[in-house]
Length: 234
Image (cartoon, rainbow, N blue to C red):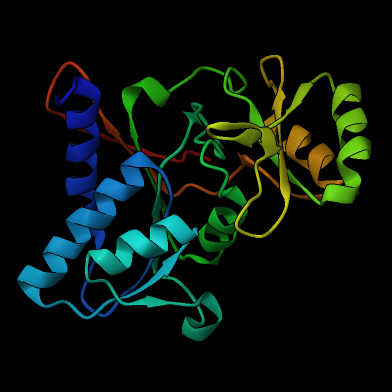
């Protein structure tokens, strides 16, 4: 059964298609809204015979993109990305994000940083006044789990190792072969400073704070059929 959230995410995915032009290199994110965009993009490519090259952020997205008929390439083979599309778990008024609910934030951040334009697709439930209600996913080299856990506690977080869905005794292993710690912080007043502190911890591969990266956020409203556009103000 389609819910208001489903409909809002479908509208956002459809609206994002207008930002894609023939010949582009397109970055494809991971998660429910990103999957909807991948499927919609595949239909547009078939209908209009567009020539696109796509860079993906996870193995799951690679499979979905190929199933949709999209041309999937490795990032080093395309040199750069014209526009990347992805979802988010939280978006604050500065358009800073928490991502990582799907465990793909390392590759997501690489693709977003490689893109001339990074477009975030969300329904309005993802908008928050301050980041932090959703835990910050921290991808960690396995040997550094104890060290990173202790450092996260010192930063005020309640860290918890993520386990595989349906297998509570098996730690989640990312596509890159690492572990994930979900760090629950109090409301984050300074996302840039917190991101820098996480970056400084030895053994942290990447974290889910995306600061100053989003060019545009498309927001599907839940009580209407509108899609709002939020742009960064400096």
